[in-house]
Image (cartoon, rainbow, N blue to C red; front, side, top):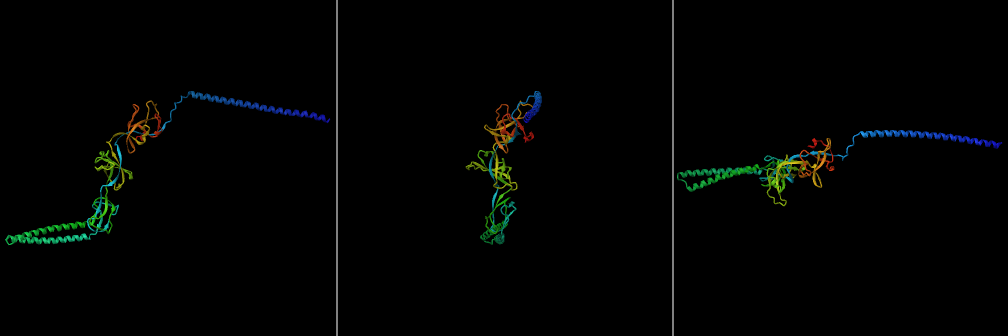
Length: 421
């Protein structure tokens, strides 16, 4: 009995397990079918949306105007205008400032220096400034001695004149020796001449006494002190050296090929290098001796010293004219570029075929640089295309030209008002 019961229970358990597996498989199959349906519907929806977007884009593309033809990007530049300006070609010649006058002031009398009033660097006024004083004792004594000698000579002359008159009176009565009268007349004349000599000596002594004060002969500055207080001076002993002020000369050595361009009276522009100052002077002297090895001629150009601002020895650069002034085409130095074919400028211009609102384009123009003055060049255009030339008022590039090629569009960053300056 026991064996039969156990055998019947085992097939029943196996049937229950198979049913559970079948139920699980059905549920899984249902889930898979549901997911497949969901993804299929989502894919169809997304495809429909993409088709709609593509259709709308196609419609917009069909209705839009055709795209413009693409060109090179514009170059950013700054421009200015070509000017017609009256200029003069010049050459730079280096020189130095030199005093108009220089003098060593000496004593005119002998004596000891009791005062030295103007040391080196002191300004002096001609005819007024006392440079030094010499002890006046000896000059005053000389005046007194000369006056005493004059008084003695005058007394002697009066006595001689009286004696001559007495002898002449006797001669009128034939009571005097003619020879005695001649001798008396000669002595009276000699004594009268002696009086004149002593008067001159007095005048000399008095003038010498005035020279105890050594006065500056012209306006200037004491450049050297050559004596000291207490030193004994003889006539001619040097006291100080003075250089003039008020006017000053720029001395330049002009090459022989240019000397005919600077006659007396020619205005010359000078740049005082240490002061970065530019002034204009006038040619006052030309040294005709050009025998130096450099074959140059010293030329003096006189200017005002600006109350002592300009000093002897300062270096100067003179701009010597080479030809007569006339009108040239002028551009800033920055407008000239140097390439394989020489100097050129880039013009900013509108092409005849350009549409309204188009950008200007860059075109090169070969030029000859004639000369430069300050920050400008006088130029002469050398056109290669018939009908294309450079003239006053046209625009040229002053910044950004190194990035240009012919007909490249230009984006101008400065206005016409600025470019015309």
